[in-house]
Length: 441
Image 1 (tube, one colour):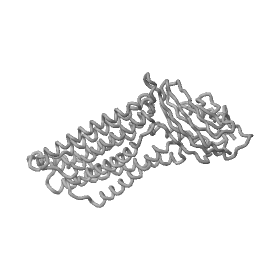
Image 2 (tube, one colour):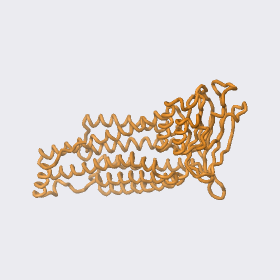
Image 3 (cartoon, one colour):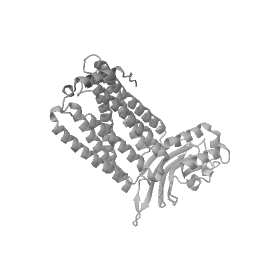
Image 4 (cartoon, rainbow, N blue to C red):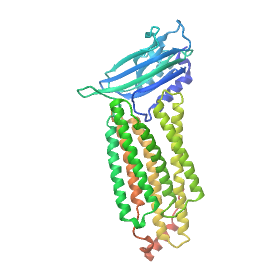
């Protein structure tokens, strides 16, 4: 029975490779356990090779559910394929030009099970001279056969005269330096923020100390990520730095979303308390961030070969979108409250200043979310694999700009705006508020 007779699995294969176009975990030495798996296509890691690319593939404890001499084991095996080539392979199967992906001349055949000759394991070193981005894929074109095996895969490039191994994909090999550079930038920002807090300590609120904590967590997250990628680059393993990275990534994610909610509510510098509906937003955002970080760990550590990998990827994207939408509501509530207060407390100019600030912050939050969730992903899909580091730089620059804007706009202020506004400014502000249109989410 050919793969072409299973349209649902063809659709699954297309969706899987579309999801692979989203940012993946960085390639390293990967250990994968496959147990009684009947999937026709199992993708493993994606990697950008230079002209000196290597693939080490060690597979052991191979067991087939229905072993029979009548089966053509050349229809079970591993191959390398680019994304563009894979779409053409699917078209070949649909047009019945071939019955199995392993028969296509568009793939790089690594190993087929007909070469086992009764053995339950094999080791192979595949040299890839073509500079391109490939995905290691396992194909099983015998639907009546389920496969169990332990797979150790290592993809790397040789670099320099010493032929040292670089386990980071081409286009991502500079990322340790990129992350360390941004760590230094955020460390400098933390030092500058300490100076600002000391200089204007008489007008410092609790939210300003929370801002400092967010910057510190971001810096530590970048440091751990730099070390994580540095060890992977040299050895293929994170040596425990990935654990610290996940911890600080978790704390950074929760603290950043919490900060946006607190600033959006005006907590600390406008009012010393949170309303019930604002507390509910926090009670929604924080557990969702926990789920998002669990999903991120599963996605990174299991790899796309896991049967529930797509589900976790969808959970992560859905939760992230919900969190991004939830943090906008407190900002809108604050804008509406400021507009209503301006009509009743006789301080139109002060409220107009605050209203303008919160509107600016609302727009900046939307731009930040859109850029980091949409534009950065778009850069990944349209940028050559050699320059995938540029999408990371773009995302980090956008995050840095957001941090700087937030700190500058909501910094401690020595002067009291209630006493520096004359009657003409008050009247002009009142007229502006009368002409103000409703601001909706």
